[in-house]
Length: 315
Image (cartoon, rainbow, N blue to C red; front, side, top):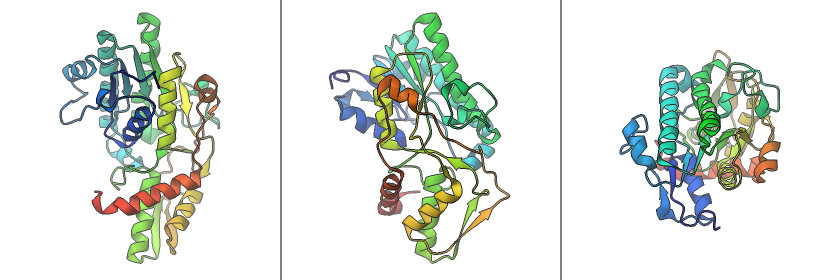
């Protein structure tokens, strides 16, 4: 509890999905809510150098979650935007933090940084052994540059920057906007709407053969907290749950949990994305004691329940 007491924490992306869970997590472990600085994009544009300088002023720690993100369709439509905005935000923010004398910078990357054909389970040492899956390569490479920057700044300046690689996240408060949501919230919305409207079919992108691993957002927040407290090394660290499920099985599971009784139709003209994703999660447990706690079934049920209760207020 004493680690966070009196610490001024800049939490970019703190008003977003994962950020809201990180706030809950660190406050429950001693942080004072008034000491957590959450810049809003309407007031602080991290693409602008002066705004980055202002954001880090008097911060003891930076946890950088802010990102421009979306699903496969969004990645295909806006590759340049995703590359530029994610790269420029992170690069400028880390440099501003170094100049300000911030004691620790926690850079939260993405599983999209891994090569398209990484052997499963993904080990951190494989991160440079190939090019990322094409549809999300601009985003994944922009975020991976923060690993290069963190290691370079540690080597040249002694700057304590760490780099985390979370797998696909899900949970209450996720983004359910069909224009930019990821696979779990997108499927939950599709199946709930089809159930409520009495539709006989739900269309899902791809073949269903691709696999993914999913980490409950509250568990991810715990992993970020533990890394902030205990990890001070140059090596990247995976944050995951250590399991794999095909998109076909995922869709069938969500269909069942939402009570949809119709048929799933696969649009095979749409891309599957990366063929497989599952992380080796042993490094996080070894270095800072993180192990995911929430079972996938319980996490999905909680996420569906949250969506059903809040869908009237969502875009």
